[in-house]
Amino acid sequence: MSSKNNIKAIAKKIRDIQDFPKKGIVFKDITPVLSDIELFRLSIEAMAKPFMKQNIDVVVGIESRGFIFGTPIADKLNAAFVPIRKPGKLPWSTENIEYELEYGTDTLEIHTDAIDEEQNILIVDDLLATGGTAEAACKLVSKVKGTIKGLTVLVELEFLNGREKLNPYNVHSIVKY
Ligand code: AMP
Image (cartoon, rainbow, N blue to C red; front, top):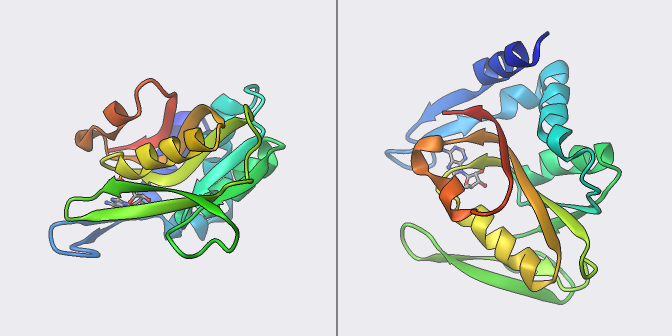
């Protein structure tokens, strides 16, 4: 399959769920992509591709779907894997960041010793929407002194302009809406 056809095939498998988890949200369900051996593999390859020669030391995955894509991408890039998690989940000493949601705030955490100074980092999540989560992840990685080489996601909701928050980072997405 050509890469254009690969992207079309992946996009066809992403399922729209109306009003989930709350009214007015169209949830992009990526689980049918994971259930398809070939499309899951193609997704990982496409997400990793621009970073193959970027000397990535650590892939940082954002809880929880960032873990699903992040770990095989880390393997492909011959990199380590570090999780960014919701508060209270990481057992060791943590650095944290609070960020704004539509209503209220949320927090993300990373282990303080997870990244060595100046290591090259690739941040992974399943989907970029408003960019708030990815922006918080970038700030968190910067706090522990990693060098961010880019972000990769399977899905980008372009109409929400999340990318603008991530200037000047290299943001790579496969399926765009
Ligand atoms: P945001 O911070 O607005 O960019 O939201 C990104 C995070 O929320 C990612 O971890 C996504 O998994 C999740 N998310 C946001 N909007 C959606 C959506 N429409 N469908 C599926 N996941 C979403």
